[in-house]
Image 1 (cartoon, one colour):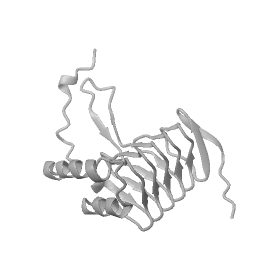
Image 2 (image 1 turned 90 degrees about the horizontal axis):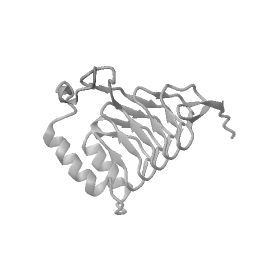
Image 3 (image 1 turned 45 degrees about the horizontal axis):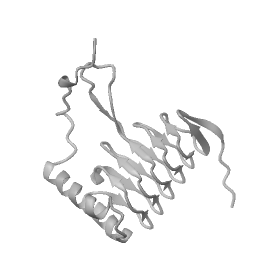
Length: 182
């Protein structure tokens, strides 16, 4: 038996009114996912206007791509580096003092490769306080990055982590304990 994409049907998935999504796509293109140096406060206020919950001290660099801000919660003192892509078909919760480095990708959607219709699967992502997602890393659907986790540059994290560990590779595995000094 082969996959038959003509059978794909995801009408159950309702991410928001189409008018809201179209408005977000247009405004996001010009003010958030851009290299025009608009102040971070403008980007944050626009994200909040569309339902994102964002704490104080958040830094938003150029070229950020956020699918649906109404599925986004960000704590205090969070850094979003250039070209971060939050593909949040489901809720993404980011704790305080988290760094998402350049080009990292948070992926909440996937497909059920076991089904002939290749059904859509969505699962939330939680990134707990003090974590760091390295440049060009990928965080897969359903993952919880525990407090003070590090995902090194270019790694792919497919499973939830333990607190205070550094993960590396594809798939990422724990390589050593993270020790934070004062």
